Structures are given as C-alpha cells and as structure tokens.
Amino acid sequence: MKPIYLDHSATTPVRQEVLEAMLPYFSETFGNASSIHRFGQSAKKALEDAREAVAACLGAKAKEIYFTGGGTEGDNLAIKGVAHANRKKGKRLITSQIEHHAVLNSCKFLEGEGYEVTYLPVDRFGIVEPAVLEDAIRPDTTLVTIMLANNETGTIEPLAEIAEITKERGVLLHTDAVQALGKIPVDVEELGVDLLTLSGHKIYAPKGIGALYVRSGSRFDPIIHGGHHEGHRRAGTENVASIVGLAKAVQLATGEIPCVAPRLAALRDRLERGIREKIAHVHLNGPPERRLPNVLNMSFAFIEGESLLLNLDMRGIAVSTGSACTSGTLEPSHVLAAMGVEPSLAQGSLRFSLGRDNTEEEMDFVVESLIEIVQRLRQMSPLYAQEAGGVES
Ligand SMILES: *Cc1c(COP(=O)(O)O)cnc(C)c1O
Image (tube, rainbow, N blue to C red; front, side):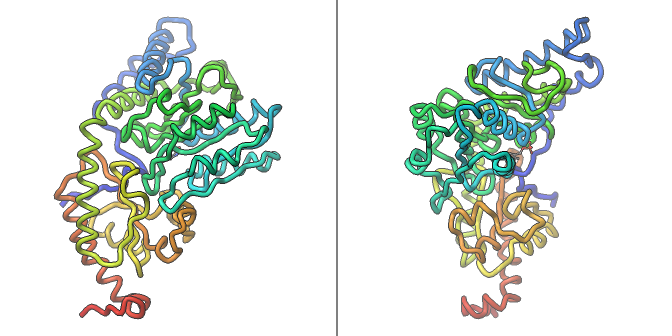
C-alpha cells in the first residue's frame, strides 16, 4: 500500500495546476517586477494580477494585499507592525493562549520591548469567549490577535462576534487564517477583521510564500527594510513565481470549498467513528461541531502519542502529535493544556489532518492499524493494567 499522508495541517504538496502556473516565471518571464523595461513589466503584470486574484477571493481590494515569505512572516508583520505604528496610542495587545507560535512568540518579543500582552484563556473546546475578550480591552489596547481556526484541534473561533467588539472599541483585529483558508469561507468583510494572515504551503502552494491582508487606513510599520517593494511595507524583490502559485492555490482552494469540505468532513467522521467504535478510552480534543472539516485530534489514554506516531509511521501512515513545531520536544501541547486536557491525556494525543487525495480505504486502514498498535502499546503500559484493570489476553 502506498504511504498515507494525514498531516496536511503541517504542509501539503504543490498541486499540479499550481506548479504549471508557476513554471513560466522561473525562466521565460524572469524579470524583476521593479524594472522599467518589458521584462520587468511582464513580471509586474503577473504580480499585480496575482494580487487582484488573492484580494478577490478574500473580499478585499488589491492594494490591501501584501505578499510575504509565509505565514510566520505575516503574523510577525501584522503584530509587530501594528504595535510599533500605534505605540503612541498605547503598548497593550490581546491574544489567546492557543495561538500558533508565530503569534505567541511575536507577542513575547514585544513584551521584551515593554509592551503588555494579555493571553486570553479558552474553554474546554478551545474557544475564546467574546465577553472575556471585551473585559480585557483597555483604552491603550491597540491590537487584538485571535486565530480563525486552530492548527492542532481545528477549533473555529467566533471572529465575527469578536470583530463587533473590537470595532466598537476602536481596536484593530488581526486573525491568523492559515488553517482556515480553503476549509471554511474566509471573507474579510464578513469576518470584520482588519488584518489577516495566510500561507501558501497549507493550501497546495509552495513553502516560503504567503500574504497579509491589511484593511486600508490601518497603520502598520514594516519589519523588513530595504527597497520600495509592496508599498514600502515589505522590502525584497518579489518572489513572482511563488506569488503566482499562491494566487492560483488561493483561487482553487476557496472555489472548491463547497465540494471539498463536505467530502473531507465525511472522511474525517468515518475515521473518528471507526476509532470510537473499535478502541476504548479515547477522547476527542476540540468541539464536536465548530471545527475544521479536515482535522481530528484524539487522545488515546495510557499511551504516548510519540510511540503511536512512530508505530503508525512504520506502517506508512503519517500523522502528528500536537503541532509540528512542538514535536521533538516532550512538552505537552500548549493548546491542549489551555483547554484543560490532563497532561497524561495530552501526551497521548494525535492529530489527523486530511487532504484532498485521501480516501475511505485509507481511513479504514488507519483504524485497523490503530486497533492493533493501541492494543500492543497498552499491554506494555503498567498504567493501563492498573487503572483500566484491563489486561487483554
Ligand atoms: C503553518 C502555520 C503558520 C506558519 O506558516 P508558515 O508559512 O509555515 O510560516 C502560522 N499559523 C498557523 C495557524 C499555521 O498553521
């Protein structure tokens, strides 16, 4: 059987249509988009067409889109950029405890510069309560940054409700929509956000490319200094090939939601049902309803997620424990911890993240493999013998 990839929240392959759209921009149309001559003008046209396309998919205007070197840079630019540009108004920011490290560590960095950051708690499903957010806003708060969907559990945050609050209080609202894009509708007007980060490699475009939407009129400073690119907000010769690929991927991903999302949800439900029916002592991490269609995060009691992951890998099945960024450390996931998941259960958690090429047969094979692996690992676990009283023959 060919390997089964269930780690699409970590990254995705570049899809054929995206690759084909990009190819001419490596060789034939190689110009520098800042050059005045015809080579430059062809590159410039591709760049601006891509900007139009990305904007249209998000309900934004072309001049509100800034291309970046990926989601991490987009989050850094949004957070540090807004904090720095508005520091005369105040040096206070609000985020949540379950953000991606690109957001959390940008906030930590600003704390080192004397900013104050509030890290909002979440409920047991990982949801930020809008009323708690409202209470945290002070007159000197300049930015609220809350992700649209969580990368470990798929939890979808109530951004539109949060936006009503930030709008009324005159605070800018940024959202990291890296995981949400292409899975649920992402429209900057419907969400009411002022800044929004997206990344190419989570939606079948290359790694190292992304974009930041900034509502016109919102003040933000650059974090990379150099030439006049991207309206003086992001210096560096534009990566035209990747930008063209990103635009193609955004168009495909957002256009395909009506057919892809239900298919992914059905596969995810098949996997979840199989696990629940055939394996005892499992727990869902995240809300049953308000989550992305392609993510399943489950804890298997009495086992280490790492051992599960390695045993699945030996059978050609690729999954993740927590986020790719925390794997390799023995620290339990900060997301599950914030949700109040017991450390021992958090250690036994796996994230399955599905993509467009996964099949029902693959889900069934994963369930069959898990049954065997979980049983074997539990038989070796002293905790299991004690607590579940369940030495299986
Ligand atoms: C992957 C990811 C990022 C980082 O994007 P890169 O393009 O890999 O830098 C940021 N936020 C979330 C939610 C992500 O899943």
